[in-house]
Image (cartoon, rainbow, N blue to C red; front, side, top):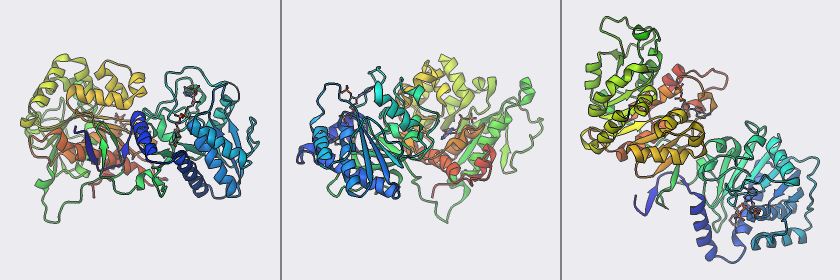
Length: 525
Ligand SMILES: NC(=O)C1=CN([C@@H]2O[C@H](COP(=O)(O)OP(=O)(O)OC[C@H]3O[C@@H](n4cnc5c(N)ncnc54)[C@H](OP(=O)(O)O)[C@@H]3O)[C@@H](O)[C@H]2O)[C@@H](O)CC1
Ligand SMILES: Nc1ncnc2c1ncn2[C@@H]1O[C@H](COP(=O)(O)OP(=O)(O)O)[C@@H](O)[C@H]1O
């Protein structure tokens, strides 16, 4: 990667990158400007999201995150709200300079500060810990702070988090380990997060998606605008290498009217071990992938069910548009190949040929398990990457357990640092990797990564991963033979985003199933 790159999507900066940005900006501005802007922006957003809130509880920590909260409290009181500040005891340490200044200003403005939280509040502002939260500190918060934190986690009132939900690690979206048991599965009320200076990856994956809720950005620029993360002005700004991106839309325009099916490319699906092999039919998984490929826009879709023969009956439910073919015919198709959905034990036997000859290749489910189990297949995958100009890009689509098997790790370890794990696999196998789950991570061999911002828990049902694999196959199908992973990057982001978007736009009263999801997929446009 070059030292800087122009990003088409909103940038996601690590804590180290944010601190660099903060220091660079602070050097150009008078003392206290950034905290003044952060507090004003917070108050403005609070008034916008909860205009009728009368009682506001501002929970401040003993660092600069707390300073932002104190500054916001001054504005909210000036706006006529009844504001109550709870300030973490500093345990003998002096507050940082800016936070100490904010405290003086809050005291001068007469905003009430007490250890006792209010009996009632309409809106809470969580300014306990932000970017300064340290993962290596294992001491649980003691005394009143612990009770405040629990109340922030349990409340059914609106909560506006400054920078990050307190206790959530900005780089990974994981709770601090000691805090995880305190946090319910999901918040009971509305959560909004105002991220300062830049968006942070942890707000968009793992626990971050639920607990950050609706994310806004305050870049702390002169006019002090705030933007909702999915409605930000066009990106295209230069960002340091290693910067992530938040995928907020698909980016390829619709094809021209003057098109034909050959333009969209063909998709072959190999998987769905037939019941005739060992009595355990897994045809459905491959049928879902094939249906997804068809509806996501492939010109033609061919399907080979592993273990089937030309004499095997056509399983019910396969759309008439999908061509059932022999293994040889399917493998020979130009376009993209999706391999592994419901592949069972038979998929390992076809992988050597597939890895050697397929153009664009998507490996899912049992193909990933076979890879994890067989070092010889891993070597073939590496050889394939080295010869990509004569084959094409490879995309691995593991869920956390599948990635853990590939990395010889554990699901917990993968989930603790989803971005790190996806990047590690992409570099190790020189492939594109989609680590699925809430806030799917897409990673490339050069270290770039993106977090998908579409999708929701309605996708947590059997078969939606097969649909994703087919959808990706369709988006890669039109790539010319020998394309690089870099050429596959944007079509891959489109596919992952559109798959989640189909769930986001699903009618609330209608049950979502994987087969319906497959039929609702669209081309980007
Ligand atoms: N300077 C400015 O003008 C600007 C600042 N900005 C704002 O500053 C924020 C960063 O401020 P920061 O660096 O002071 O850290 P912050 O999030 O307040 O945390 C420190 C506190 O947390 C505590 N603590 C840490 N780990 C812990 C743990 N595991 N468990 C328990 N406690 C733990 C730590 O305790 P200590 O280690 O000191 O004992 C200390 O009290 C950033 O998020 C943004 O909101 C921006 O708006 C831009 C302008
Ligand atoms: N809570 C969630 N939020 C967003 N997407 C989700 C969520 N749960 C599951 N998904 C998505 O649903 C799909 C599930 O895939 P997978 O686990 O492989 O299921 P299966 O093997 O049953 O097809 C993935 O695309 C994943 O990202």
